Every structure is written in C-alpha cells, then in structure tokens.
Image (cartoon, rainbow, N blue to C red; front, side, top):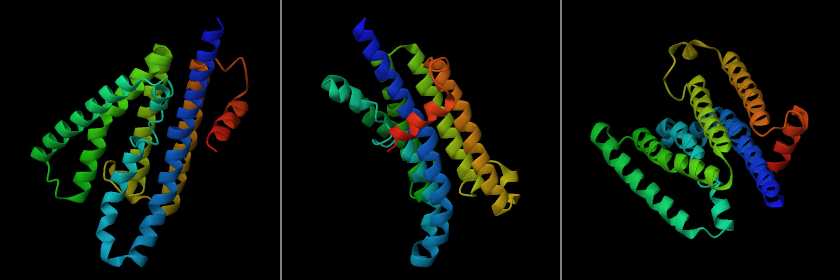
Length: 224
C-alpha cells in the first residue's frame, strides 16, 4: 500500500513537470525568442539573414530534445539500461528511415527542410518514450494525459510560429498587425495552459485536493 502511494506521488510529480515543460516553458521560449531573433540577427549577422527560415523548425525540435524528454530519467534512476538501449536504438533507426524517406520527397539541401526532417524523425522516439515510461511507472491514465499534453504543445507551438509568420499554414494570420499577433499568441498561451491545467487536475485527482492556483504554484516551483 505504501509503495502504491509513493508511485502515485511520483506520477503526479511527473505530470506536473510535463505540464510545466510543455505548456509553460517551451511555448514561452517560442513566443519570446522568435520576434527577438527576427530583430537581432539581421542587425548583428546580416550575412546570415537567410538562416531565419530554419529557426522555427529548430524551435520545434525543442519539443523532442533530450532536455524535454526528461521521462527517461525514470529508467536511469532504476537502472533500466536494457530499455534505454532498445528505445535509443529504435529512435536512431526510425530517424534514419524517416530522414531517408523525407530525402526522397523533399530537397534536404534546403536548411528548413533538413530541420523539419530532423524534427519529424525524432517524433517516433519521443512518443515511444512517453508511452513506455507512462505504462512503466503509472497507468493508461498517465499515457493519455502525457500524450495529450505533448500533442497540445506541438500544435500550440506550430500555431505560435504561424502567427509570427515563421511558417505558412493559416493565411489570415499574415494580415494581422504585430499587436494583434502578440495578443493572439498570449491568448492562445493562456487558454491552452488553463485548459491543460484542468485536464491535469482531473486526471491526477487534484480537483478535490487543492485549488488551481496551488497546482499552478507547484508547477512554477518545479520549473526552478
């Protein structure tokens, strides 16, 4: 019984950390960095102004970078080296297969296509880690919650990049003013964070334990 309680506490902590990483930190970094880089790079590195086209795709890679996929630490702490090796091997092979397939369709000599191929190639590994670790330490409930938060974060970051004019998906966003773009980005950030916070509190049974403000405080403390 005591072990189940400890596992529940660990799962709850990981869920809050997942929320903090994917729904608070990464979207905020994207919102702040894109306009900043668009303004600074042409001033300090005018010869590399064309490199601005690859920035949004490398920002997408933040979603799949090792620092973001912190769930592997569960296996590291428990010395599950076999799982780490097998999933690492799966990640490497899937990256190679996707990159080769991408190369047959798109021109990977273009920096933005290369960066996009790297991002897409890392997705199978990221999803496999999320699903495998959630089932290893928790239940299907954590699998649904963590996968949902990751997908919400991916679409949120893509839409923020589109609002910034970094990628072209929705046409009407490019007719907006800078103030309107900033407003919609912050609105999207707030609504997504609040909606996902409710999802987190519901799945982790926090609604009857603490208030939303208390949960948010815990999330912000974890981010330090």
